[in-house]
Image (cartoon, rainbow over all chains, first blue to last red; front, side):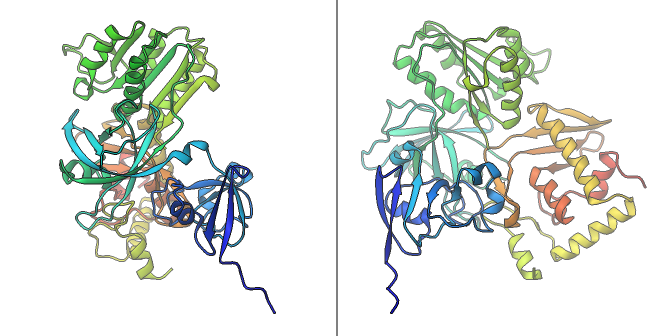
Length: 340
Length: 150
């Protein structure tokens, strides 16, 4: 007589650092979430977004056809799988980045909503029930919208713009995407006092703890993680050399400029350089003009010895990497939060 | 794939606010067939038009949000966006978000190019339905990008 199938299996994480029991037949993504281990996902477990990649060292079985288009050959070589497509049918062994262990689900309330520019919205969300969120400057959260106008709720990632010391809530900067489901909800439907749920913190975009000089380059809502890091450095009374290049099209795309110029008086060796690439020639602007890459090249001829942190579109990041490498920064010292 | 299934996957979803069919009452197969006729009339194929659209997109992306002239009297402006969006055809994976708006200066006529819309044209000959914000009229695009040979 056949042995009955076990009702649940052991999931060993990071060489036994943590062991979880997950019910037979659950998806790995759902099973981990039920045990409080929240892997980022934007599609609700439908193998569409490709965000829920985890390393399945043992027991994952073959890659399924639905995973194929979302896993690169490098992913496959490293045994990466989509957690939403791995069915728990035996014991599994996983490797998961340590920072995912501290990811939690939060319920919050919108306490402030301001336009920072014509297309960038600033939101302040307080954690409900006098709770707190512990994060590192530069990390991001995943927010959930509510259904509207026949559109489903969606999940989207946004960098935290506030410093870790203000841990009773988070500040976000959201740029409106013309046909974006989430951003149009945030601009047009989300009201002060509304509840909003989110998970986090996620990500490894954070400044090193060394005394190495820092070079930040950002554009648009890419300001958020840099602003969080700079406020954190101010609170820690950092004395290292720091330079922040912020690229925008015109003056109406600039924001937080007063605060950033003010920071030059608070941090001993900090320089803020906003650069405009499409400002009318006859305007009152006396600051830097040109593409951010040109402005960085002009101002930092030799950037050997810097660590560079970039946040913006893939196009901007790729262009900046070339400039920084030719200026003497090895690629290993260039860190980025690419919008991909 | 059945007509209804195709219509379902091309409708509004959690990744596409308006869907790919817009207000078009035609079935996806009809849209594809009619646009194919246009390409035949122009003596070009879907790969040529996809390649020209990709060239315009890349030129716009390199200009980091500034308008760039991609042909005489035609500008392209890239708008970046965080994340990736999946193809409605699940087996095709995800595509970088971001869009390039191509505008004919003299008339103000414009259309939007995205990495996903280029893929839909290249793989499926699908230019999206009328009323979709991402619909690309093949004859307009071919003329604007200078590849229409007739």
